[in-house]
Length: 606
Ligand SMILES: Nc1nc2c(c(=O)[nH]1)N[C@H]1C(S)=C(S)[C@@H](COP(=O)(O)OP(=O)(O)OC[C@H]3O[C@@H](n4cnc5c(=O)[nH]c(N)nc54)[C@H](O)[C@@H]3O)O[C@H]1N2
Ligand SMILES: Nc1nc2c(c(=O)[nH]1)N[C@H]1C(S)=C(S)[C@@H](COP(=O)(O)OP(=O)(O)OC[C@H]3O[C@@H](n4cnc5c(=O)[nH]c(N)nc54)[C@H](O)[C@@H]3O)O[C@H]1N2
Ligand SMILES: [Mo]
Image (cartoon, rainbow, N blue to C red; front, side, top):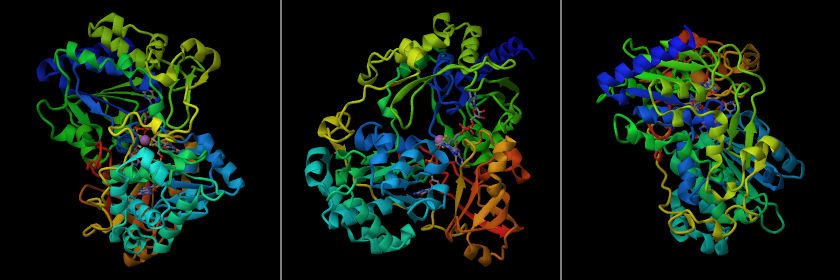
């Protein structure tokens, strides 16, 4: 059909569904796509707010870790990537830098050429771990206990920076007393963490002594791997406290980086217009649906049920947890589904209408960052191919067809960029589109002093200092090696080094690069032998949520008790089911995040 016919049909369908079931029966489902300020959240949000659709809580990736940082520091700011070159000890904690964050790697290499050591804390032997000086192959979900154990040694040895703590931290003596409890001593924590006590001891000693007596400082690259566990919010919070304890923020090349997103103050309210919910037929704020609970939202939710789903920037059929339920829901005959996509993904297979989307090469975007401190303009390199249209255009058109106000919906990309840059954020003052057009990237007006180096930085926490309370308490995830019974193996449903979540998984060049782990379950010899499984055998991997079939690969990437397989499209997987058939909709302890890495399974030879 033509674009005109498609837009008319979608408008008519959404209108009649809203008339019968209320506008909240329409659910937008999106994540980052090509990640720009406009494509991620601008006209799309305006449209759904004005319509009165259910809101989507976008928690699938980073919500627990982001909130953990907010709780300790009040916002999300950290060591800049370039500063890693000045570190003497780099800890990659739940961070596959060489696979997922390759642009940080050159600075790590630079530091290592000057003698820095790299420690990787990851249950899987990633490319990053294989290149490290030390790899701590911890049990999934044990980071909270490991962080407390590191704190135990720091305080036991008097390696804390008391002057910094007194000035900049709230509750450090309570944290010290808690950390010094016997259960946090390395010899008592080691079994649960899954490493030797001596390894924890060595890590803590190296971390605590870095930056002292002429040594270069330690920096932690914490990444989101750590917070995809049920206790991941408090685990991330505990790790985030470590550089406060040692005062490592005071030194160039010290500190910690999870996210820099708090340094960018784009005017999200102007782009997204949450106030438009008040002008919708609902006349109030619409209900919120956690995107990790899509399976339940499509199969059990009522008052009203979800009757239409509009998918863009996302491939929920492949990436959302508990996919047996997700696919049952997306397969409902009475669900009207629209997907705006670049490729015929697993999700387009469920669509009533597929709309062609532009790629980042075909649209103009305003970019922030997770790591660096540059505002960037990403120009369209070519005109859109075929009939591909941008997210902004699509939702603007739908708004106009709905009869919504042209002053909010007939708005072009450049005007949206201007609105996004109209902000009171102090670090973005004076940054304009004209400057970005000329220079393409403009540094934030970031303060001269190192982040969190003095108390003056802590303006956004209740105490005006780093918040170390409540003390982080070790609790095992519901699904972990501590709790394992019927399903004894911890399962890592991992990202590919050469795909972007599920983007590129259909491209043969990328598939070639991911050959080693295509359709494979990586297991340790001990677990394989106990199940009479040999290399190359077909195996069933299952739990109470689902079953998938893979080929056993016996290697040293995982320790016994842990197995791993990587995320792929369902339709490129054996029997059409990928790793998310096994993951759960359970949420993290903080901020409703996804718990992909808190998954237990059993494995059988077919
Ligand atoms: N090549 C590539 N790059 C990507 C992506 C991609 O798919 N491919 N995805 C992008 C996206 S959306 C994101 S959010 C980032 C994410 O980048 P990362 O934050 O690095 O995320 P993950 O790969 O999920 O997890 C990192 C590591 O954590 C390990 N891990 C799992 N459980 C635990 C645990 O309990 N403790 C510890 N210490 N480690 C654990 C995993 O084995 C994994 O190697 O990468 C982005 N970059
Ligand atoms: N098992 C398991 N599941 C996971 C993860 C994991 O590590 N393991 N990682 C989780 C994480 S961290 C994340 S962030 C999510 C990511 O999940 P998704 O957000 O679904 O990410 P992708 O799989 O990359 O799919 C993005 C889709 O958006 C499309 N797209 C790109 N740009 C645009 C655009 O401008 N407009 C439109 N309309 N479409 C566009 C791409 O073609 C692609 O199909 O997956 C989560 N799921
Ligand atoms: Mo992500």
